[in-house]
Structure formats: C-alpha cells, structure tokens
Length: 126
Image 1: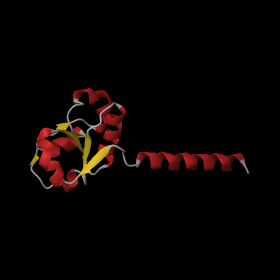
Image 2 (image 1 turned 45 degrees about the vertical axis):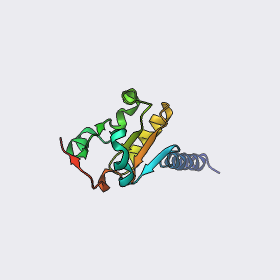
Image 3 (image 1 turned 90 degrees about the vertical axis):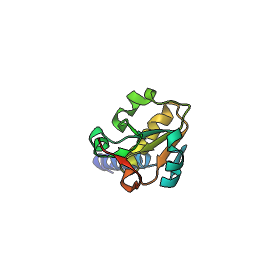
C-alpha cells in the first residue's frame, strides 16, 4: 500500500472520530420540553448561548447571553448551586456549552429540546 493511501485512510478515520465526538450527546444534561422548561425556569439560570446579534433579535424573557464561544472564559459568572437552563437556536451550541460547563464542574445542567426556533413562549427583543 502506498504512503499516500495510508495517510488518506488515517485522515478519514480522524475526521470521522472528530465528527462522532462533536455530535455525541452530552452525558449528565437533561433535555426539557417547553412545558418542563417553563415550569421551573424562574428558579434557574437561563443562558442563551447564541451570539449577541441573535440574542438581540429575540430571546426568552429572563435569559442572559453567554455565547458558546465565550463560555470557557465566562463560566465563572454562573452559580454551581442553581440549575442552569441552556438553549441555542437548535441544540448544537447548547450541547457544546454543556460540555464546557460539565468539564468546569457544573452538574445541574438542562437543555431546551428543539431550542429557541421551536419556543412558543414569550420573547423579548433588545
């Protein structure tokens, strides 16, 4: 087998492994329906992990904006003794944020099923 073929195979395996890791469900995060989310969100820290412009375009009332791109630096802003309700447009970025928070020692993590695009509750625009 030629060296270029071996390199190609190794690169494909690395790419597939990376994609599998990136899209793997996060252990230790509970997915909540809209009804479950609404039932207790006043007792939780609601975090919108979308970028600032998306947040300004509309967000769940009471949410604070910590973009997933800043989560590692800003995780200290969140309390570890209170539930953290995460959401993004779908579920991709909130899963990434949950991974960062879990690694930083946060355990009480929840994610809105379907994300903001499926939210039917009240919305605030900035």
